[in-house]
Image (cartoon, rainbow, N blue to C red; front, side, top):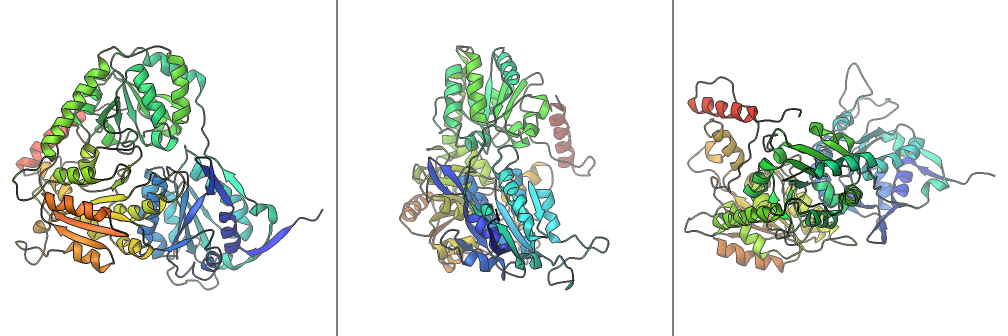
Length: 623
């Protein structure tokens, strides 16, 4: 029997295959790939764009303003979809491709799926060197795209049109695997894209993908249950894996059944609402006094879906040396960290199986009530810092409180680098599950506005939280990457952007001075500029208005509240700017290990070094 084939160029076949991939969300069949962010240029404008143009109705293409920001928008989309749908970002070769490396690192660190496709040089090398080609004298096969190998879960260069037949399913498999999840990258040499090939017709048959739920080893679960039953002061740390597994309700019920308080990582925040009966606050360096007090006295810690980053563990100073860890994680690499009793498997499945082993066991009767009492004290401390005062300049905490109060129940808060993450991790009171996105795995400045655009797209269709993305960022981050305000204005996607103008990179200035270094090159007033006493002021509202956004600058918290209500009624993007205090922060009490000079002529640096040595003496190192 003669095999049926379809003759297409490699680029056409790639796009046709992408449109045949589907997934299910809430019982509804939807495209696996929600769309493409593209900047066309040398390497993807002739062949790949020709293929994408013909499928606009099935796979919409959105024009980006910057390759990095459009890939960050794809990450924001993946987060909002809880890794169940994927966006694509495509660039030219050379600088266009390299602009996406930062975004690839962000997706890799946060275990998030995005498909990155870049043009590449000629496989036949006849025109070498081509425009935008980097040349390695000892290895002519190396191109700029090799830079992605360090920051992707799957990497391939398609040098023959048949190679996409085995490669594409592997790329999708990596992106949907809860253990391996991360970005996939395809380099498409220009001459390979144009080649026609007779592809087997079955290659283009529709496929409905599902995200696997690997079950844990039975003995590991039994051992975990036995260890947990010995606990007098157990603690659950809920990470991002809880949310991506859809295990929020299961974990909450498990915690309530057994009287165990739940604290959240930055990625895990939003799995529970702020006032949930088992919620005891965010943990770690930008965490709450309640969560960190519970961590310090916990004897058994059940870590679910977290990679135990230093901001969660206080650089491993937050826990007693003899505390025992049980780590439930889909990734073996994460589950084994710090000699944890590893339970490798899906969070929902593993917690349900652990539940079946625990029976009627409960933590001591007073444990959860004490945790809630600590959390109530933390709430009162938040109120103290968030309540308006007579100070002429509002603090971040006060701004966060106003925005939080006006936000709709299902509006999604988006933040990333700078001082905002600490203030929203501590002070944003989550009203609905999965309405919080703080990218702090990579702490990528520039993520915020781009992710707001991607999140706005994700609010359309099945599985969407609904509501409006509310982006909060500082003036330094705004200056770094703001062009997707224009993107959202062009496409009509709705988001609210709140810019806190504190005159530079304020939170890193705080760390610099805390470790004994005088303010230097962070706040604008401390930079090498023409007039330090009068730094050039940026009118953020006017700038945003010039890109097509609704915009206002406000002077007070009362004006901010009124502007937020106004913004809720606007279409497209709205930008609100407000001057904020560069030196006032909500307190936290977890330590952080950073490098401090071992020798210095500065007394303050010497004191900071002694304090750093004290921190390191308390670390759990490899135990």
